[in-house]
Image (cartoon, rainbow, N blue to C red; front, side, top):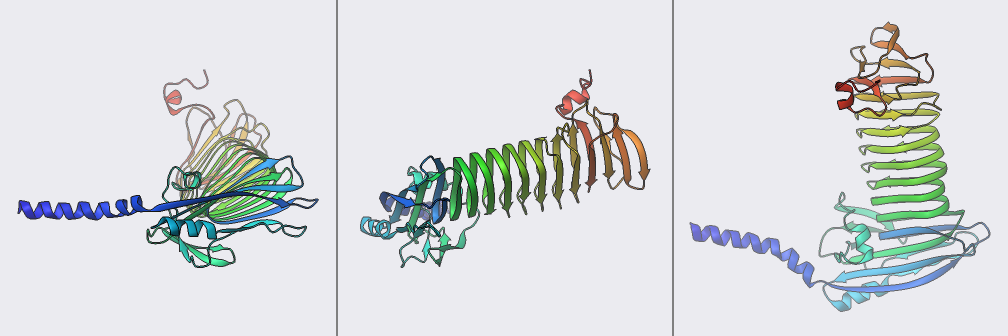
Length: 388
């Protein structure tokens, strides 16, 4: 019995080791070059990649976009890896109409996976990001290409680093991987099927269609920020603009220091937690998620908060006045460290006021609604430190 058990354990160990050995035996090849794409008087550029990463950076050169290209291929033999890397074509279509940077994979490649060479910059940006979809189809060079995790498929990824003029209009379509826009100014339209999208130190307008990708926006200032995801989460930090619109299906929304004339956040099952919210008007809606808002209301006029099936926590500055219209299943509103004066109550709808009244909160909670001071912890409230 012990001998049979030992043989069985050895067989399991060999089965587990086989994919690792295959990965170790894989051969890689790289190819790198740089191209310039002439631009018109009103700089416009489109960038399309299949698997890998696209990085956009601002440039003072208004006549062209400079593109650094790096291809990483992985196959069973060094010859096949070199053939794959050499067969990748980057079309630098230029002209007044639609200048662009388009990646075409080899015509004989119908499915492709991410190479497993973790030290290479191409995969360092992407390797830990592609984790939701085991098999997806994306558009690549005018034809469908499947992104898979099957080790038998060729490994092939492309990294594009693009320097674009300030105030350019740039559209990026990345099949699977990462998009990063950094230290730039302009109008950006970003689309990614799975992976991650990051926007950092950007001024202008940004629209992101991220599907399963996670999104991070840091130090953004400008006119409009629109983000849409399905399973991807959204994180915002130091955002100041005219209009913010965030929409997710199952992804959560986390933010800090968000100032806008108008702010709209909608989720399906994702939770919403925003600290330092400073819009003139705000609309926060979720079907099943919880909502936790810490609001600076000095410049706010009205906020509508609706969690159809979840809890709502509203944190407001203790010394500021506001009006609250609350709908809860029980008709009650919990307060921690903050007093509310009852104005009117009808069924499960309560009208409340803090101080002399002012900005209005219209809150619907599927479960409980709790109002507490902006920067007080639960411990501070319990030990009576609030308001001293």
